[in-house]
Length: 395
Ligand SMILES: Nc1nc2c(ncn2[C@@H]2O[C@H](COP(=O)(O)OP(=O)(O)O)[C@@H](O)[C@H]2O)c(=O)[nH]1
Ligand SMILES: [Mg+2]
Image (cartoon, rainbow, N blue to C red; front, top):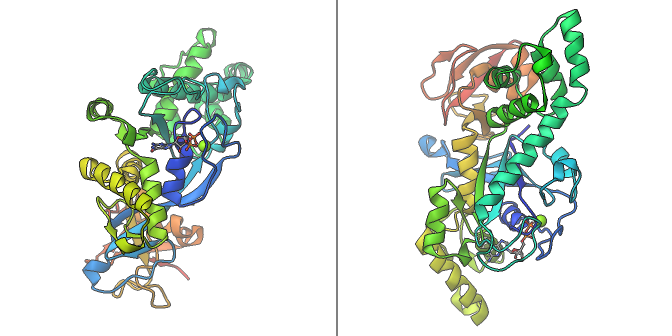
């Protein structure tokens, strides 16, 4: 299963545009709340330097693609329906969106950098709303949703625990099954949340604290302020100082479409583009591309691709590892060069990689071999970004 990232935020902030630019999927984009009723799923790509350059041979990716030594590795995105305050108790489209997010590894919360939308996504005029205020309520909705799941029927279970024994960790873990949460994170969250030892002192605040810790440990997120093509330098700086990724999803979308139509030459994340044939463009197209070009010069690109890579590499802390069957030629059994690129959490080991490739390969693991050094690696050997690894398994 690949990495899954949920795109969330109130209506109209630019989620679908951001999603569409990254996945090149055509989706509904609209200037009114709740354009997106159903969530959209799509595949986007994160860049990394492909080991093919060290090998001096072109790779043959099974998934994703590679251009001039830059490998594009698939990650899954889900663009969920607009989220408004009170969603956890059914307001707006209610809890549905939260259920879409059960399997997400992390969140990208999109906010409107222009501050033009109230909490329900209605236009209230430029700069009337502090974009950062959204960060608070969305975070809170997610925590409330999780706290509700934790609290549901909990007291009864805790009483049983007191009379019959057992572990609190197991109860909470069971409640969160299907959310893709690691048992280690549940244990840590319970420690951090200072859970009362006496049942009498347990209240909803305790569930809130546990939920908050679990989100922090297990489903981290970033904030992306889009529509940056409409704000000035000071507004942009202010957001960046708060750790917000400032992007123009719309300009990225323009570039992807123009590139697809053969009008420009542009790879996702490039800081500039070149016109294929200026004579082929209408004055309106030239004008639009000129505006995009100016924005890119000042900002170092549209920053859309970078925002995705920031959450994958810096926040979720993923590395890329290349499993191969032939450690000398870095191929699979059919001679395909570096066919697979796997995203793994930093700190993952040889056995983790084996299980990721195939559960059978994990079960029959004997040893691994580093394709660069040819050194033999044990199951607990910690892998590094860019490693090319052969797994040797029992027949
Ligand atoms: N100028 C500008 N407009 C944008 C950008 N992203 C989205 N929009 C516009 O904002 C409106 C809402 O966008 P949409 O992606 O449907 O928002 P969603 O409801 O959050 O999915 C549409 O009119 C978009 O064209 C952007 O980066 N720049
Ligand atoms: Mg939408």
